[in-house]
Length: 397
Ligand SMILES: *Cc1c(COP(=O)(O)O)cnc(C)c1O
Image: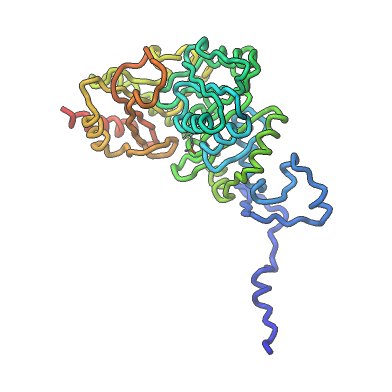
């Protein structure tokens, strides 16, 4: 006969419960798969549309809802769903809204993996993917099958700012839902849910929280924000049945970083502006791309919509045609402060090289031929970053 050892039970049922309420700077962190129901009444009286009636970890905890509510507020929306990455948030929108036979429109400069995802849906489910030129609203010609248009302001890599007004107006007339990848603007450069004198609004914003909200280059997350309750419920249902869930620890980390997101955004934008001015003087580049440049495609749309003059810290350059891939690789390999890597919004400046021929579908008369390098400006001193680029350029001579 063993003596009854209570230790194991005691270890599990700790005597001290968390206090109902103490005030701290950061909200408390909840980690949960199971959430304990107070009673069977609580269990049975829930309704799935009431997100805040906590039921299971995948559906959220106070930690994830706090972050979601913050993101919705920053972006000017009302409802927020969180996903484990920006791409997962994009996927949620596509899978919740598109069915066989539908047509979906994407900007030529859309975030590449979104297009890859849609092409995959096209092949397997008979969804038609059509590409439009973001600075030419006339290139968006929705048929009666059109369900969704993806917008991105400014677009990935080549940073053209779209004709958001006319694209959204055309979409509304054609009853096409508008989804904006809002990672670049981060809810800070403009309000996607109210961006013109006429109070135009997109239906959905998707944001890779991996970038500015995280700010550390170490956490992946994405959000889907809406204002319309019915649309939110459509997305929420898909979110639930797909088991899309995020870690409470990750949510708390991003929540913590939000406090200084706009300060970082502005500093990175300012540093990028300093680099932009310097890059424009360098003879090795045929084009320097940034929406604030008067000669940039979509510049007038940027000045009209980003009335605060804000931009993310991204600048791309196109090397003159005499620089071949070997030279561009050498340039990237010789950078010391700029690290070679995807993503942006963290403290460390990053560089990535692209071949325009491989990342664009349409003819783009506003882009020069050549290889493109994108700089993502971090929080280092801009003079040090300039020195770093200058050194790497010198080594090409
Ligand atoms: C990074 C990024 C994404 C995807 O975010 P992940 O969290 O890396 O999956 C989507 N859209 C844009 C514009 C991005 O820059």
